Length: 187
Image (tube, rainbow, N blue to C red):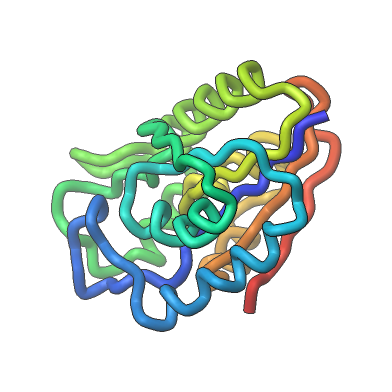
């Protein structure tokens, strides 16, 4: 059995509009210690992450504490909303959860995000059977992963967790089958 600890990043600095380089706030940086404390006794053998700075930075202290490398997998990145910043994210998110193929002209649908993230997860599970793994991730990307294994995870669940930063979800896998999903709030 494999255990995957999906670590949703800590609080980001939304004044930086570039998704790839958006850093954590001071509060977010401080909260990374809580992630380290939580994961320390979980017998983690591998760490993977989205390439986005906030995801990497959230698990960096943990990786350094255990002297483990953070392996970047581009397909664990967050959903691309559009080329331009959108002001009404809540309306956009609701539209996407109502129609999982909905996307803006230069963005991704939830179906596309889910397909990409699940393919990356399957690769990790195939290569690292029976290991405990950390994956640095994002709110929407993680939500699509949970939704893949639990169809009851919908827009209301997404809304419930959207301000949980950092946030950890542990999924136990038997092969590629999720057999248990647990949530852990860090604050």
